[in-house]
Amino acid sequence: MRLAKLLLPAIGLVVVAVSAGQSILGAQTPATNTIIRKVDDHYNHLASLTTNYTEHYAGMGLDRTETGTLLLKKPGRMRWNYSAPAGKVFILDGKFGWFYTPGDTQATRIPARRLDDLRSPLRFLLGHTQLQKELDNIAVVPDGANYRISGVPKGMAQRVKLLTLSVTPLGLIERMRLEEVDGSVTEFVFTTMREGGSIPNETFDFKPPPGVVVVDGLPPI
Image (cartoon, rainbow, N blue to C red; front, side, top):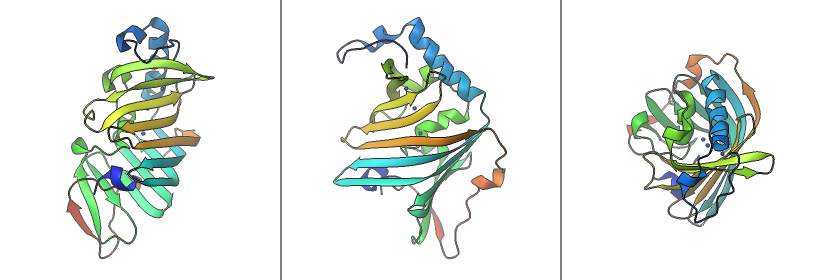
């Protein structure tokens, strides 16, 4: 079951008004690089993050909104706790990604290196952030008081047409929009962000409910 089919249950910047036909390389300026570095610096100095999110998916005949809380902790840990639908989780424990929806008889496990889940672009925030290396054809444009950074996540070109991050002048990511090659669009909006703070490592452990079988396979949506 692919993320794009059901919904799914994650990165934008200064001054260059790039026209649709302009070369992406032409968008690289000192000012552009400055805002990208601010994003890199912000998250490279961040050890943990807790934020509320709203996720909206439109495509494949569906239009769905889900909400929850995202927890990030270096190195390599991520947990998406869904409040709607309640109990749905996506966990990255550093080695595996885990997917489970209440009522299912199976939980899916997949090695982190094989993840093509649409939430996975946020994984680069869990390491040493370098947007210039994480996104191909990167471009930056002003967006009101914020900036938009766009590009294609490395290794996801067959699935993702464009990833756009809306970031503040200080380098904080407030919105993530993913446009897939099939026309589907998934957007995450992050609010009430709490940076730093202690998050126990066991928060990122997945324990299957009684009677639920763990299977290896492709990430569900």
